[in-house]
Image (cartoon, rainbow over all chains, first blue to last red; front, side):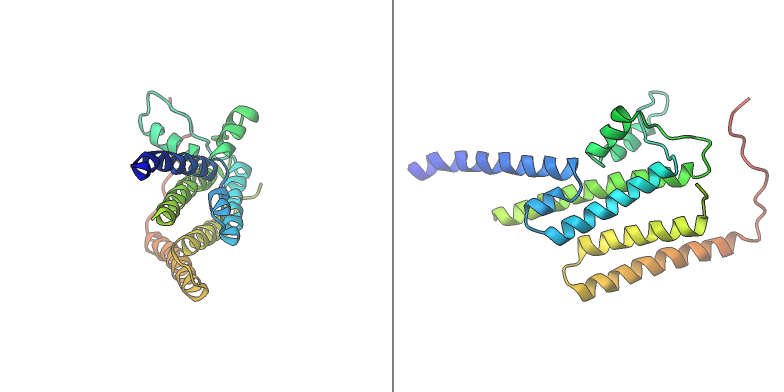
Length: 135
Length: 67
């Protein structure tokens, strides 16, 4: 009886921790792996994604936002938001949008989208690691 | 900023190859193997595609603004 009473609360506690780790993994690339003790991979992932975003911004690529007249921008915006806190810092903190006539615009957009998508894959990897830890 | 297509392509291939080799493989040897496979495939594929497209004319540049 006491085990049954403890079971759901234990599951809730783990769920809350998982959500916090996943949120951290999304906000700062590599932080989820860092929390789970995979330091080297965390640093490598952070470096890779930071370089991708920095190159994208340097080339003045497009940081997508939703355009109601172009429905596919919803998907591109979600992919960009995947980079986590960097998206909001760039968009709202620095007012960055990209420059459509810049020579590296298309390349920069590819780098920015790739940075976001890579971080989303990292979040899924952290989720997988958390599940395997739980089991 | 000067834009070198080849340099940017190489950097992109490097980053993506490094990312997936770290994500999917655990041992050092397997990581290097996957990294080289991905990197060579991306670079070689791009060069091959460029070579295949070479005979076709590029045409006039697309206008930046409509009207």
